[in-house]
Image 1 (tube, protein in one colour):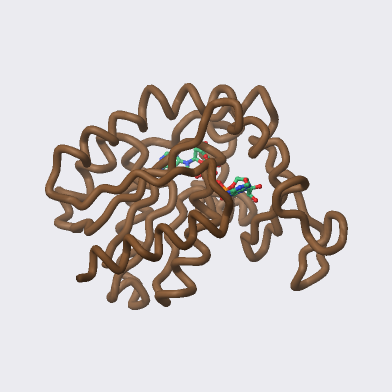
Image 2 (cartoon, rainbow, N blue to C red):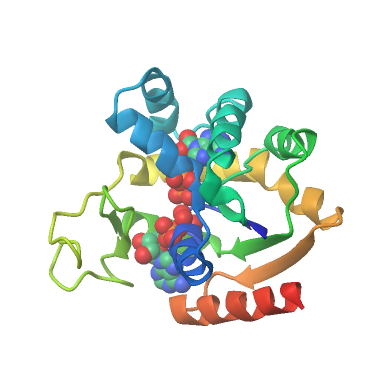
Length: 214
Ligand code: ADP
Ligand code: ADP
């Protein structure tokens, strides 16, 4: 099964993706994590993407589609995968279609505007594992340390308030058209209330996945 998580920054895509991927033993394909990894490794792609991401803009469709196609060739993707933060433009969604990569279900995580900045500005991450925390809503057991490794958590550079506002604009202009794109397609489509608690969202998505499989 191939699953897409769509939604604005802070909607909880990464948080929920980690649960579903663990439950179902499928890989999480987060293009954001892949780009951040390239930046850490200082690859050519990383150097190219760094400034674009710092402004909250989108990396080009060609680059992203190249990354995703290469990732999907890995054997762990055979039984399916969860796309987290991809596709982000109609061009990327068309690219999937052109490559005959079918999608079974889209979950749109909706989040009210006033929560976006609060969610993002409190986000802290464990860089190596991608584990996600929130200083207010999902704090680590010890202040600013990862629960598993006890290594320090970081705040992403693009999680500053100014960049978040730019990212929300980009979402509205370039990604939100995917709502109609997928609603008007044969792909199963579910809206999920991202304002609910982590556990509530987790259990609604689980239930919906059982419906999809039935
Ligand atoms: P969030 O889910 O918090 O919005 P991501 O980690 O998904 O953040 O993405 C961070 C940044 O990485 C984006 O602002 C964008 O610059 C880049 N990025 C990630 N995925 C894509 C994509 N599919 N297409 C273009 N740019 C992307
Ligand atoms: P996205 O991948 O959509 O940008 P994340 O999963 O990274 O979103 O979540 C953004 C921030 O909000 C993180 O700090 C996370 O711990 C927190 N968070 C995620 N889901 C919820 C929720 N349902 N309620 C409260 N906080 C949440």
